[in-house]
Amino acid sequence: MTTLAPSTPEAEQVAGVPAVRLSGIRRVYGDVVAVAGIDLDIGAGEFFTLLGPSGSGKTTTLRVIAGFERPDAGRVELQGVDVTRVAPAQRAVNTVFQDYALFPHMTVAQNVEYGLRVKGLSRRDRRARAEAMLEKVRLPGLGDRKPVQLSGGQRQRVALARAIVNGPPVLLLDEPLGALDLKLRQEMQIFLKALQRDLGITFVYVTHDQEEALTMSDRLAVFNEGRIEQVGSSAEVYERPLTEFVAGFVGVSNVLERDGRSITIRPEKILMSDESAGAGEPGTVQEVVYLGMVTRYMVDLDAGGRLVVVRQNLETSSQEALSEHGKRVRLSWRPEHTYEIKEGM
Ligand code: ADP
Ligand code: MG
Image 1 (cartoon, rainbow, N blue to C red):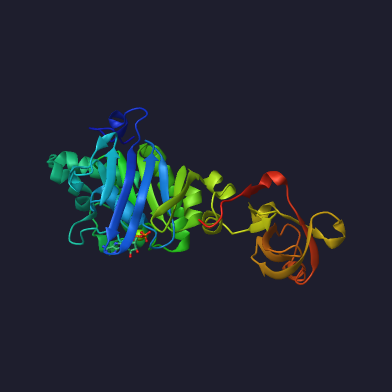
Image 2: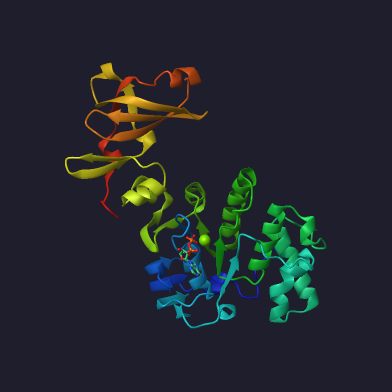
């Protein structure tokens, strides 16, 4: 029922032109190479995530897109236009930070309207747009409150409303759920994904949480030490990690050296049977971790290497699961569930 007129992002999106294009981006602080030469295309309307451990260059990359950081080398394009030397306020992007950064002395409505006041919209238009945005983030009627009168989750949604009120074609989000507890974070993940679909704009989302990234993203880029190790859909990155780092960071690292090759198999794709089964690689269960819905087994294989196996506790009690400790077993898997990875990256 609400619209993002006057300038809808769809109208600004040129078919086939990426919403964001980074070419050879490099940013150095003293002798720290924060971003070490990144090439990346993010499509219009994508929910795209920059995933990686702390210090891997995600925030720096996002700040380069926003224009808060000038890259030492490389080019930033938004909708096909080179904006490398354009000031942040002149770029068609908005940013949501983890710490919300709301103005404490202003009401919720005034906070949301802020971007429109800068644009010179009339008071009445501003009010209407702000209320429409508050409805979009499911906070109707809270416009007169002050930020301190809201919960953390509500404040984060006000920050969102403020960031989308101008109808930016690209929204940048830097660990926006990092300050929320787990339950609220999971609710907000679903909400954010739905909001992005509803708005039809591009989200560039930063997180160090692999589960969050897999849940929300259309595609993601896995960062490691200022470089991108892999770009792909959640399923591609999870099921076909290209490097040992990606295999370990996105999910559980299950890497085996066999016949001079490194292969990886996801824990839930491994069948664990009794030693007497006769087929599969023999090994010994070294560790059992009962996790409620599933149990995780660490198995040392006779031929070398250790694999993690995850089994659903369909009819298994915790006692039964834990009694597997020390047992001789056989592990098997389907060849199509193994992937060869590159070494030493
Ligand atoms: P991430 O967001 O993935 O945690 P950052 O982009 O914040 O990573 O940081 C990448 C690297 O650059 C880190 O080693 C960090 O310490 C360094 N860095 C980031 N910003 C600055 C800065 N303003 N001054 C000095 N070093 C910085
Ligand atoms: Mg960061």
